[in-house]
Image (cartoon, rainbow, N blue to C red):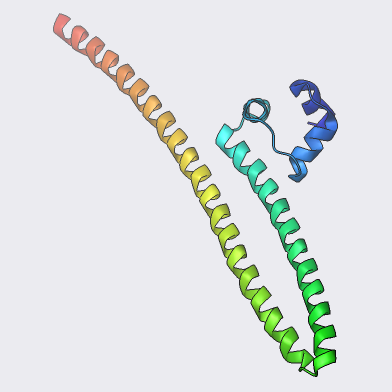
Length: 158
């Protein structure tokens, strides 16, 4: 299904659908429900996909800002160290280690968030399948019971 087709069914612009896909915009709960209906997927699954993309874009912007801040800080420290005679390599390595630690912490948090979302989707799918299996089992039980009754009635008549 094309972006234009989805946009037409949701009564929104194709640009907005593009923004949903790349994570730069988050659809309302009503639009998430409509998207779930269009693609025949659970609402929670659609929401997890949309939010994951959105949070990833926010994280990329955060990291970009941190790199810019780091660059500005290093530039200032280089200028200061030139004036005062400090070891530039030690200053740079110290700041780089600090940035790596912070990045790894945030990466672990995002990974955990993603794993939790995947786990919730899997649990939802299991719950849906369990409900379908129970429904089929109940139907089969009721059909078996009616056949047993028929057999009993026939055997009583002989």
